[in-house]
Amino acid sequence: MKVNGSTIRNKRLKLGLSQRELAIDICTQATISLIENRCECKNNDILNKICNRIGLSPEEVTNKYNYGDRALEIVETRLFNCQFEMADKQWRQIKEQRLDTSKNIDRYNLFQAIIRLVRLQDADEALFILNEIIRRNNFSKNDHYIAWCFIGIGRSYLQKGHLERANNFYRIALTKINETALQKPMNLKRVIDIYNAIIRSAILSRNYELAAKASQLAVKLLGKNQSLYRLAQLLEYNCQAHFLLNHRKRASKMALLAYWTRQFNDSAANINEQVPKVYVPTVDELITDIMDHQLSE
View 1: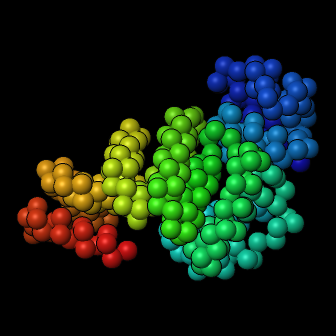
View 2: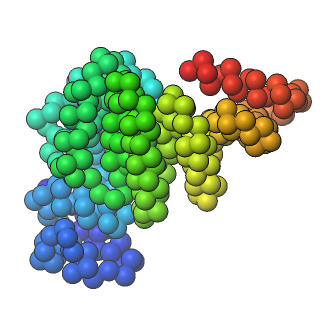
């Protein structure tokens, strides 16, 4: 495969890494030299690991997404937005034999497990697939997929009626995604998507303390990265969890923050329009609105 060796070299030097340091636990120094000087890489797994380590995506050094990246990204986005029917349809269109990395094969299998769990209620098959993915360990510390596997295992046990076992796996998932959030580089949106999935799962399992903790961590991470991605939804989940824990003061604060976040998002949709005056509801009305909205999902 032809790659842009100078892009890799420049990023490596910017990070202060030698070729030997970049190669540790990935390949030989000679391979790094071949990639940088001859612009060739014969192993996609090696290229992906190098890119993960220095904070580049494979398309940045190949000037294109490969087939697997394009197709799997579409399915992944559908799953995180709970568009399971569309995700299933697009997953079935993927040609597994064209997936050329072990990571993408495991992404394909992970999506299969989630779809089977949600669409077919097949908890046993999902458990088998997810445990095999964890055993193979093809994902790096920067990836969010292992945490997603543990969420899937938890949801499988919830479906089988094992509430406490499900909550144990949600706790493991939270630990894993907290570790991912500390890595550089880190895909912020996907990490937030995982926090969101943990929160929803914990609420379904009536583990409101875990839901409150996960939503608080996610909101802090967004603040640190100056992002509004899913912020209003996370604040609403935090409000719901604290309300169910009978923490009325905390729930009220989160309800107000969620309300003003929604107002900001609506107002920012078109900054050239005059921002209309809005009715300011009471805290009790806000909490009731949030509870009705979340419990109807």
